[in-house]
Amino acid sequence: MAQEQYTRCPGCKTIFRVTPQQLAMRAGQVRCGHCKTVFDGNAHLISLAPRRRPEGEMPFDDAVLGPPTVTLRSSLALEPTGVDAAAAAERTEPPAAGVGNDDADRVREIAYEERFAQMQRKPPSRTVRALLVAAVPLLLLALVAQAAFHWRDVLAAHFPASRAALTGACATLGCAIRPLRDVAGLSIEASDLQADPAHRGLLILSATLRNRTAWPLAYPHLELTLTDAQDQAVVRRALAPAEYAGGTVDLATGMPGNGEVAIKLFIDASATTQAGYRLYLFYP
Image 1 (cartoon, helix red, strand yellow):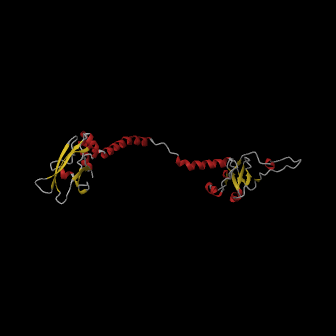
Image 2 (image 1 turned 180 degrees about the horizontal axis):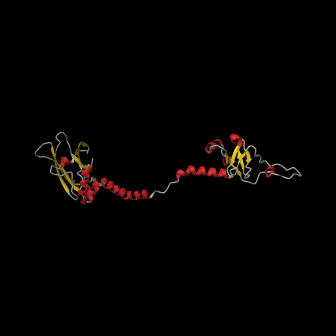
């Protein structure tokens, strides 16, 4: 750290903390930042160390006996004559902490405000507020449209009046309205597996599927398992709706609400020997 020295303005008696580097500029010629007096900083150097007054001698200068009563200023308030202020600021050391002078506190306060100025947000303008207000209903409309697209099958099933509008929207968006898949809403009311008396090795499967909900449900897949005397699986086969529902059924519309579908299938089991069967329904 450069050695600290003190010089006093002959005009306003303000004392400044200075460094030899600052006084070396312009041969010590400086300008007081308060009264604008130009003086030789080297010629007006003083010491702030207390000195004892000789007995019988009257003091001619308060600064000779002890620290003056004026406020101590930092070198930032002392301007070199004929030197650009920015260049002088680069050559001048920052004030030392803990001296309690006003200019050093002011400089630290300004630096703090400039550092955090970008964190202070200005209130939005009237145009921005108007755009935000207009964007709210648009965002709500987009949210409703997205929800309707995601739950389109549920809406079409529970609100049949909306099916036409949803179908038209899907025609534009390239989607489709499908029957709901709810395996808990389906049941096998009755089933039977008998040998065909007219054809050896041919089995006849008869079953009734019921939709227990009030809205259409997608046709399920059926799983038929032939078992032996120990109820062990001998052969298993999955049947798609197109294989058991018949060619006259519109699979796209699903099983009608509270409706039943009768099934009759002929199954070739000539290569197996079975004693029983199991029949399940599922959605793949």
